[in-house]
Amino acid sequence: MITHIVLFKLKDSSQEGIRKAKDVLSNLAGKIPVLRSLEVGADIVRSERSYHLALVARFDSLADLDAYQNHPEHVKVANYMRGARESAIAVDYES
Image (cartoon, rainbow, N blue to C red; front, side):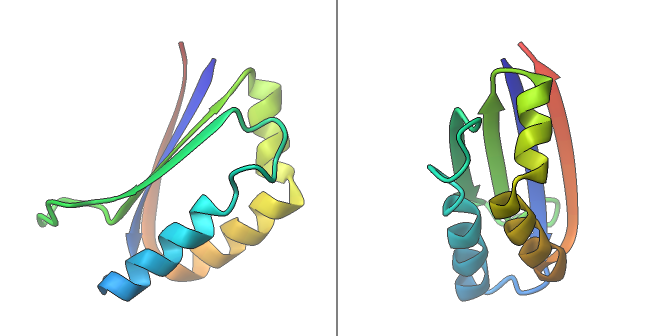
């Protein structure tokens, strides 16, 4: 199992800006066959070191993660997030 985690710090940190980005990310669910599970959450602590959103996606293999990264639905979301984010960090691991 491959777990893909991405944290996003957004340019628009208003509740509306966070909600919109969360909705865009959440809408990937059910659109990419290799995506086994998807969870998107907004930070509730809002400390100085917090990121605004977390995405946790799971795949059966690295090949499936690669297929997800190149899927047209993901590409659309990634393009949106490139414009909406101030920064992003990611980690991918196998369990």
